Length: 287
Image (cartoon, rainbow, N blue to C red; front, side):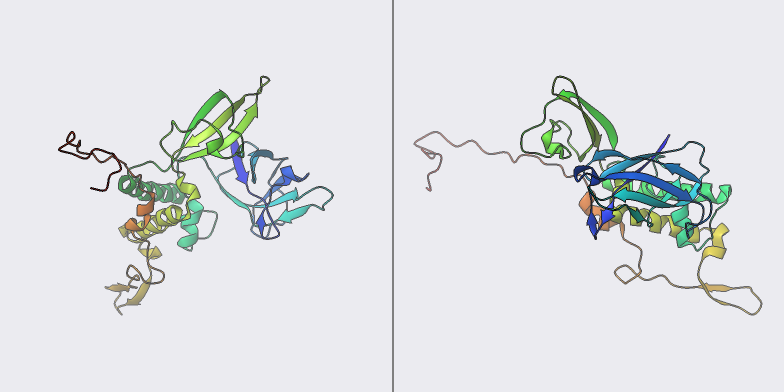
C-alpha cells in the first residue's frame, strides 16, 4: 500500500477543508507533465490525518516513476470545488530515502522516464549523501513510529499539537500522525518520533545536491559533467569550475546543517556552601 500526504493550499495559504465543511475529494495521476490524456490512477476521498494534512491511499501496482497529479477539493461549505495542478508523486516512496531518483535526474538534465539501472545508481548516491548527514548530525533522518494508548489530552491544546499528549517521555522531535477516540473518552494516538529529514528543506537540498555532484564526479559519468573545452585531438578535457562555498549556486556545506544536531544538556555542578558563620546565612544574600 502506497500513501500520499497532501496539504491543500487555497487563496495563498494552507487550508483545512475538514473544519470548514469541505473535503479533499480525489487525486488523479497522469503520465505526462501537461496532465492530459488518460488518467493512470485515481484515489479518494482523502482521510484527514490532522490539521491541513490529508492522506490518499494510492492503488497498488503502480510502476516506479514520476506521476503528475491534479487534486480536487472543496475549501469550505457552500464553496465550489477547486483543482490543484501542482502536485506530483515520485514512486517508490516510503523506502527510507528523503529524495527520489527523479529529483537527481532533474538536476542532471536527464529526461524522464529513467532506466532501472539509472534508478539504482541514483538511489545509491542518495544513500551515500544521507549517510554523510547522519554521521555529522549523529541522529537518523527517518522518524520512528510510536503509539500512545488510552491517553487523555490536556485542555487548551489542539489535538495535532504534541504537547496535548504525554509525549515528554520521547527526548526528540514528536509529530502527531493521527488520533482516534475510544468509547471511554480516551484516545489512541499515533506519533512519529525523530527528525523527519524529508520535511526539512535544507537537509533535502543538501542530500540532492551532493548526490548529484557525486554522480557528476564519478569516472563513469563524464557525460554528466559540465565541459568547457576539448583539445583538437580530444586528448584533454577542461571542466567548468564549481562556485566556491558562499557564492551563489555553490553546494551547501555540511556545517550549514549544524542547527539540526541534537543538543545535549548537562547541569552544572554547584559547590556546597560552607556552614554559617563561615558561609552565607541566607540563600538570597548579596554578601
